[in-house]
Length: 328
Image (cartoon, rainbow, N blue to C red; front, top):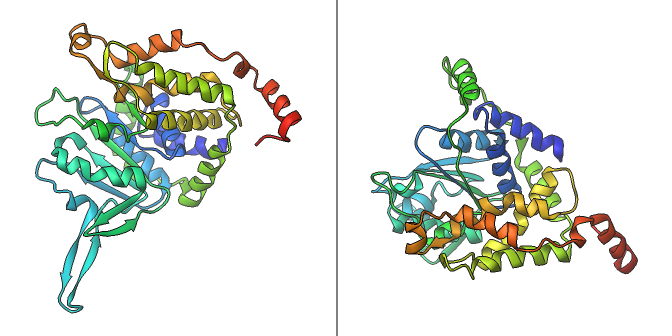
C-alpha cells in the first residue's frame, strides 16, 4: 500500500512543488472516501493540485468551472426529450465521474452549490424523480477563493460540512519557487503527467484503510474532541456528528499512510485542524477579536486529555487477543 501511495504523491509533487504536506492531505482525503476543499488566493496552485491528483489516477475525470450563471442541471444533468423515442431520456452531467474538479466553487450561486449536496453525501443523483448512482471511487475536489474577494459567495454550512477536509496551499518558499520557475517556465508539467494508479487499486487501498484498527480509547477521544467544540463560547456552531465520522476515517487513512494498521492519538491530531476548522462558525465577538477556528482547535488539542491506553497499541492488541482473538 505504501509504495502505491508514494508513487501517486511523487507524481502530484511534480506539479505542486514544495508542498508535500498538502499532497499528503489530499491522499488522506481520497483514501478516507471524502471530498477536499482547497481554499487560497489565486495563483498558488489550487487547480493544479486538483488536476494533478485526478490525472495520477486512471479514472474518469471531469472539470466544472463554477460561474454565477451556472445552473444545477449543468452539474447533475437533465432530462432531454427524444423525438425518435417519443420520450424523455436522461443526459448525465459532469458529476458522473470518479474525480470531479469543481473550480472556484464559491463563484456560483448557493442554489447551484447545493446541487452537490446529495452527490457528495449519498453518491447518487436524483433528477425528475429518478435516482442514478455515481461510480466508485467518487471524490469532489473543489477550489475556492477567499470570500473577501470580489464575486464570491460563502459556501452554506451544509455544503462545507460535506467536505472531509479543507487545505490552504500557501505561497512557496523561495527555493521551491525557484525550482518551479526552472522546471515549469518552458512547459506545463500537467501535459507530461501520466497515471500511476487506477480505480481498482484505489478501491483496494480504500478497503485496506477501512480495516485499520481503531481502539475504543481512540474512538472515545475523537468523540470527546468533537463534542468539546460544541461547548466553546467563541462558536455559534460547533462540529457536527458527521465531522466525527470524517475525523475517524481521516485518522485511519493517516495511520495507513504512516505504515501502521492501527490508529494512535497523533493520527487524530494530524488531521484535526483540516477536518474540523472549516465547519466551525465563530461568534461576532470572536471574529472581532480575530480568533480563528484553527486556533481554537489547537487549544482543544492541548486541553482534551489524551487516552494513555491508546499510547501503547501493542498492549491493546494483547488484551484483544486474550478476549476476542486476533484483531484486524
